[in-house]
Amino acid sequence: MIIFDCNGVLVDSEPIAAAVAAQQFTHVGVPLTPESVMHHFLGRRPADMVAAVEAHIQRKLPAAFGANLAAATLKRFQSELRAMPHAAHALTWLREPKCVASSSGIDRIRASLDITGLARFFEANLFSASDVPRGKPAPDLFYLAARRMRVRAAECIVVEDSPAGVAAAASAGMMPIGFVGGATRRPISAASCRRPAPGPSSPTCASSGVQSSICGVGDAPSRPDSWI
Image 1 (cartoon, rainbow, N blue to C red):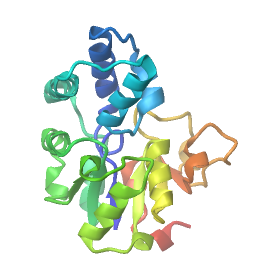
Image 2 (spheres, rainbow, N blue to C red):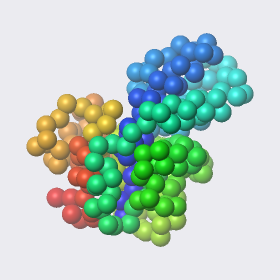
Image 3 (spheres, rainbow, N blue to C red):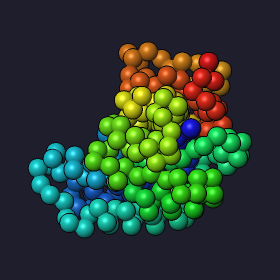
Image 4 (cartoon, helix red, strand yellow):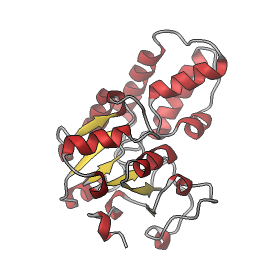
């Protein structure tokens, strides 16, 4: 089975979400840039991001902050969100069981896939970190996805674009594949897309346990044992 992260893998949402979050934080007196949001909170649950900011500033944000952030993000998505290039073609080609496991809430996952026309590839096989005790980098979400899909963890490939997601997949005993084709992409040649990722000393997802990297959704292998 292939488990896809949603944000930054299937849909090009990370720049939009980071810009909205930075704007919302700044509006309540916590000046952040989109770049700082991406750097510190890529792949994390919105609730965990808010909790981390509150801990840092040592005060609570307004009670409606989370709801306002979600609404503002979805509003921007309606007019700006796009699928990753060639995602629909790749998902048509990948016949194996597949699902989405994302740090976003289920409403945002569904909206993202509906807006971009990708919902048809996953039907009800959508899983949110809001439904587990711990978000990424804990493995809880991927355990949930495997259990609901009735697949052993060792039989799962996880396509992720964040160190938190890669760490979660590795911790769950799944094969993490680092996606570098979205907003988090690094300079990388086409010839190196299917080579092992750099060693742990490199400032990449490798230190979180990634085994290989791909430049596009269509590069994902169909089975763990086919990634050679």
